[in-house]
Image (cartoon, rainbow, N blue to C red; front, side):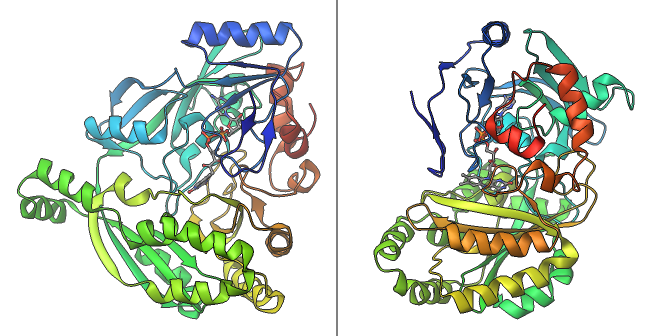
Length: 454
Ligand SMILES: Cc1cc2nc3c(=O)[nH]c(=O)nc-3n(C[C@H](O)[C@H](O)[C@H](O)COP(=O)(O)OP(=O)(O)OC[C@H]3O[C@@H](n4cnc5c(N)ncnc54)[C@H](O)[C@@H]3O)c2cc1C
């Protein structure tokens, strides 16, 4: 059966597909494929735009390996939660909420599997917050002989277990199939979300101040307009949350009503609406209308504020299919990058009906994280999946690379291991791969390109 990515960017015909019922069956399938000389890849929700999940060998869906295995409460009020690797983020959010818990941060959708999301460095936004892989405290990983290794950040520094953990929590599936992931999660929290339309220049020049003032800032810019929608999300403190709950006639009622009301203009009208799909289809046949369409879309944007549980605020729905490229650039380069991108869009006349998205993250120490070692801004360009994107993405990539950018592992780019060797400890990653996977069972074309051939 053909495998197709969500963005319709890659299709593949794996030689074998399987959906193990449990972990022992997963181990047996991996071992059998390895003995047969096949490559092995796990797939989550297929939401990567790159060929990260593509294989010519065995494609494993972990859709039966779902749910929370254990919850270990921490003195902080948070918990270490071990979750089966195939669990989708929307299921995890629901299960965590039922335990009074929540993810510290999320990306802007919740369709991905836990393993797929961490394996490509999925991130949200917040200058003091890291991507999902920074929330991983341990993993259980299946190796080519079908054995299972549990490794975590409790393993001694420099030990084989610890280095395997450091790679496995963001490895593009290159060091084995994750069967379970232990995440550090926090007590459930409410966010106050404020959508504000601001002049483009104000956001670009005032970005540092804006992200210092708000815990999480997401900015959307419709090319060809001089406005940005900023989406600022801040946690309610204990008193505000109590007052809020009281206004909603009790916590249960509050969560129910807030959840129902959490869909906002940004979500309904800008990113997910069927009307946007119609606009995209129109833009496909009449690209010259795109600047007017963008001006109308931007003019419709308004200011609004609401409060809701974190996962309801952070996650939007994306029903209109698109292709995406996103680069992580040093925070200090952001203004220059956006200015150059605006200049290219102005002079090229390229029809781009999708907004450019700007987010940020704190520096982290995950070996293959796009925010490794530096405070980071993320700039994402999108194009409707039926419209040509090559010229736009090539121009954007040139600007991103010149600014020292690192591509999101799950989004379109043309970089190779040679290009990326200055950004990541690829030699150390290769050593770990050589130990755990000497025959290259977990290779695919994408890992060969971006991590190098083992
Ligand atoms: C609409 C949309 C919105 C998005 N929003 C964001 C966002 O806000 N922030 C962001 O950073 N990214 C975002 N992404 C990118 C997305 O989060 C990543 O590409 C993510 O990897 C997709 O998860 P998945 O479960 O679909 O993984 P897949 O694409 O299926 O797989 C991704 C990689 O993980 C590997 N993998 C999967 N399961 C396992 C396993 N059990 N063991 C080992 N390896 C495994 C695969 O082999 C592959 O290499 C978005 C993508 C889309 C389509």
